[in-house]
Length: 317
Image (cartoon, rainbow, N blue to C red; front, top):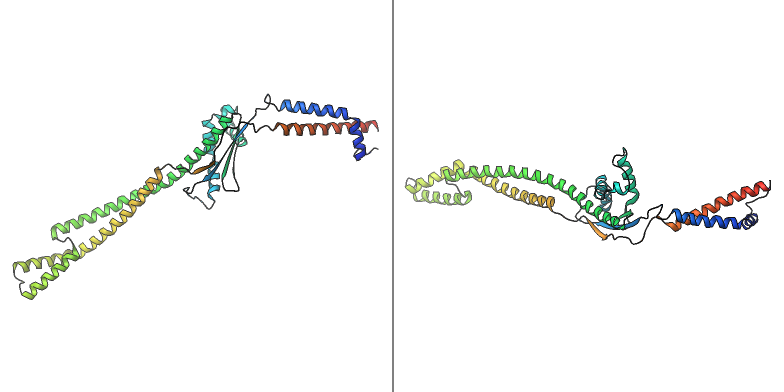
């Protein structure tokens, strides 16, 4: 039996059947070029955007900011927004009445839209579409939807802080008002306005009254009345005054926190900084016709050679 896998024998067979192989090769080139043309495979254009996470993104876990952005941008709700915004069910020819509509849509979407983290910690967005302008617009919209998504997550966080801070602020304000009311009562009924200053003056007055032996005089009686007021309400006034000052400081700090949380909950900032903005492609990225033609031609020649070897084997059997 002839060993056809011997190099010399193989070359002899190829030379013998060279015309047939050339014809097969030419036909393979023509057919693969024809069937990979726009008549059968719609060309797709690629748009690319690269974004870098801004420093104001809130850290939700121990992952890097780029990894968090990648997780968020791959979220289902962002994909669905893109699908709805660009009516991709019409583009991908998938009926919304299809029982597995979402599965088919997401499969097609994931085939045409890719997200990945680069070695430089940027997030790369690649979109393939039959319309280069739509591919570019989808890239831009994904970045916008990412900002909206992160903003909504931040808003949820800060709105919770606002709710808690407002509740605490109301409680503190009520406590301040309550203490103020008690202080006002003591001020009006007992004449105590400034505990430390008045205590010093009353002490001086009492010492003078006693030293001058004027205890029974009108001035002495007035001093005695002040002394009684201070004995009865002085300590309470001092404690309330100290408590009021402490509560006011706490309320002031809480107001700063509340204002900051309201600002964070309502401000509109960019979380994905564009390192590379997408542009409409002027050259198709898919299909790679040269690659298709090359692989198809090699495959056709290989099959043809196998067929020739079978024929030669039967002839020499």
